[in-house]
Length: 284
Ligand SMILES: NC(=O)c1ccc[n+]([C@@H]2O[C@H](COP(=O)([O-])OP(=O)(O)OC[C@H]3O[C@@H](n4cnc5c(N)ncnc54)[C@H](O)[C@@H]3O)[C@@H](O)[C@H]2O)c1
Image (cartoon, helix red, strand yellow):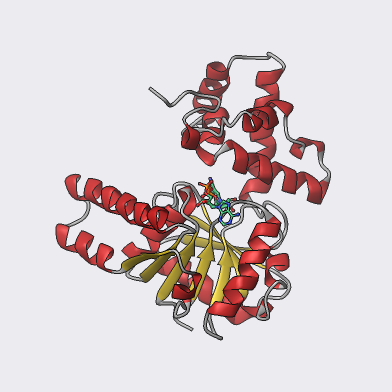
């Protein structure tokens, strides 16, 4: 099945990025947020991002207008009825995601595919919350979605080959480089990345080195574009904590057991860039 119309549920960092990717690739995109103002703000954010690309000469005004013309915003789940693919990118909470999948199952057409952008949670649990488990997969974009080339396609035991292939083809049509991976917490990238990020927090916590020196060391010593603490701020500390909790629940590996400092920052509402404060201060 060729995917033309794409629904995006969730108006956070990732939902907005995926919406931009899909619309720029020529898909009709329906953005759904719980509030119409937030859905409209996503379109405004998309316009701002496209305007920047026009200013830099990377996009023509005509193409910008065409992209915006393909995007609509709504607070009604029912407006996703005609979508070929719906990608949910809401809070990393299994109970909330399962409830959304059950609701989506009742509103989308019979042959629609439902996908989750979860970073770690078991996709099969979302699949069995619907009456179409063979048409449910994970499609894991990376942050920022318009810039990062990787998409992990997660095939739970319940998914049909046709569904996995259709979503892989969708990711390729979006100009991404998809990889296929089994339904295990953290898939490929986060299973390997998060012990490193978590241990950077522990290193800061036990006073081995300062925040700036930890980040400088990993940039200068490993040629990484940003240090681990800056990366945690970009991902979002709440999302990072949920990822580690899910990894620890699955593997019981102490490397995944969240550093207490991370949990305390989240409790304080210091969520990284999105809240203005995390390991760094973004408020100035
Ligand atoms: N941040 C990253 O680097 C990253 C990368 C890849 C995948 N992800 C995954 O993408 C998903 C979204 O992450 P994000 O970084 O965009 O988060 P975010 O905090 O920026 O946005 C979360 C969105 O979920 C909505 N939301 C919160 N509670 C809800 C509820 N009870 N019901 C419905 N919607 C609710 C919020 O309004 C918001 O629109 C998560 O599953 C996360 O694991 C995140």
